[in-house]
Image (cartoon, rainbow, N blue to C red; front, side, top):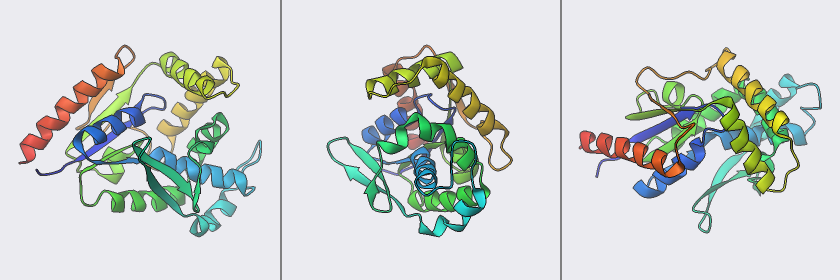
Length: 231
């Protein structure tokens, strides 16, 4: 059966990764979490003194990009690839609110985007891939057969993120999470290099009032139609 490329873009905490994992598993496709790649670069910047509480040393980080090695290693128990930074599993570290607070600023850096986009395009060159992020359907794979754009109200997204973090034992406040969601929205949509926008041929899904199951079946139906069309 002919394979296609599925691009899932959208705002933070809209469940892009969860949906992408479900679709990839169902279709037997490769799943690539591009957000994890930007988060890993952010973690590297934090660990190596390029980020302090108030300032980001862009020049220092850019000069150190060649020292950053990223890879996904499949975890059979979880059913998806975990993020490794320079050979170390950083899947848990990159999901903290501290990393979330800086990841959009890291993603603004053109040199970082250029490096990661090249890696992402290489990962998906043979199709049969589900990739989620901010610019997959507009920059990474503008010719993707299926493009989905995820959206939901900021309040709903903040509550989802708050629940996720507290379930993991992180002590955070809802107000701080909401502030982070709104801040990321602003940075993601207003940056000069590859801002978050809906591709003209993308199908927008507002999942504010959808269950994960409803959302999954909706997108799976769209994917199956595109696969049939490509035969």
